[in-house]
Length: 241
Image (tube, rainbow, N blue to C red; front, side):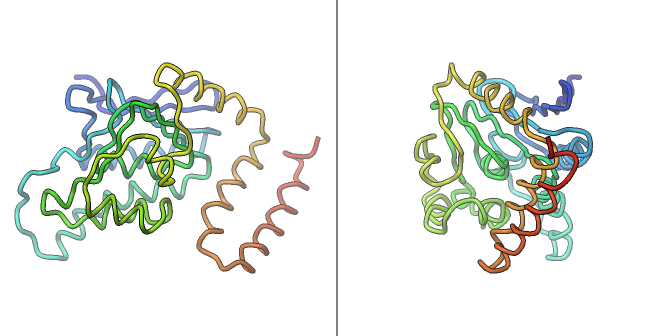
């Protein structure tokens, strides 16, 4: 049986690929746990992590989306969903940037993963959707992935409308970083990797560290953090020429 998640390392760049193209790369809870473990491991040995989906879609959501689940007490349900929150946190706690490559549809959990990547490059054929409300699912899990990524009005629209949006609207919402023609997707990603491979690793990691924390600070604290991080990193032997 083929691996459901593939991992390939080229130098210090790791590519993780969701590998269930026959069902749109839907992710089981076990796969979400595996993805979190992979990101945690690869962040220790890589300078960049790429996240892709095999086939024509990035990820059509969770394997159980739209299926009636057994009724659980609140405490048991909380434990069951912990694997999803841990997967989301793996993107945030990674010390190195995670780059998402979105060629087709990113739905539900897939939309959340696309948003969680530090940089998300989408083809002009990509589509994004949070359909949970249409399945009578109150989607605060998915919302938690987007809450520090997209503005409130954009998030509320995605959740309440359940509309599928195209890549250019996703760009205007802040859900993706750049949109390129589908036949230019791989060259655009390779160009970005080439640029990021030239940066000193301490600086590359420090940008991620600052972005992870600064948006939750008030302006004074963010400025102080920037000042201290700038002095620490730019005086290090790994950055000095």
